[in-house]
Image (cartoon, rainbow, N blue to C red; front, side, top):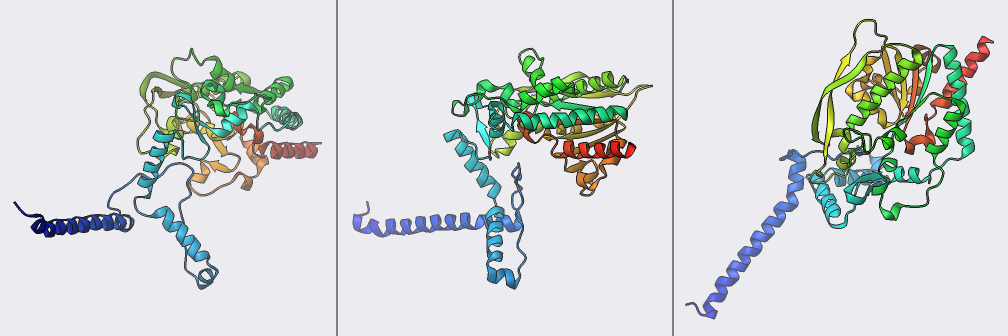
Length: 392
């Protein structure tokens, strides 16, 4: 047995060795992000959501002496170092599990884990109401647009997409509940009925069929209607156009439905939270679509001005039912043209676009109604007014 005097040097050597090992591990951990940044040792999934990739600064003497180069380079390094996406996901997961908070901007964790975006809750309670007069003025213009288009054998169609806050008010956190006031949705609907403007109200339809629909119409972790819900909506839009224009169009149908966990747009808020682990979800319906063309079918041309709710239909191929289907996303980017090179709606001749399409559809959900049309309504009104003057 070693005496304490003899054992001390051995214990001291072991302690030194342990400290060296710890220091070496610490240094390796410090240098790993730099190594990952340079060599990409492990391929990691990029962060999702509205993220603007950092831009590496170009060195110039003027930027150096003004300090702008250092600021931009610091921002670039802070947002692009190795393993950053992994560290962000770990941090977000801890915040979610320990404090029930989402690190994604505007995301609210509701009761039973239902995810919302704050501006949908604001719209549901009427916090963003733009006023009766503003909405009446807008609807009067839409009425004029509809009448002028009808004389050109064209159809205006307004579509109210559903809102998650209206569909699942029972899951809104108590801290976000407030007195419900008049909303943009209620006032738009009132005016559109009074004026006799063509419309489809999927917001109320979804609420009415919340407990009777065969499959979920709204996902727990998504902000848009479910894939199944968007398929039903697309079918309804086609049938509405057929009835109003007295035509027989190609059809969307499905015999089979695949049941799967939420994915893509059915999990868009979940993706935007950038968690380390995917949230468990209910099984959702994914119809296997079939497009039936047949002989003697009419394929009208369609111009859509919409928020993100049209993406689901556009992605699964509703364009196949129309001779032309142009989608002006928020009345800015023109699809499909901008997939090849940038193209904005403002670059196009609106008169020509109106004349080239049989149907003009404006789609908006509750939270985007305050800016419905995003300038298109005013532009179309002015264009049609000018056309009427020229005719007279």
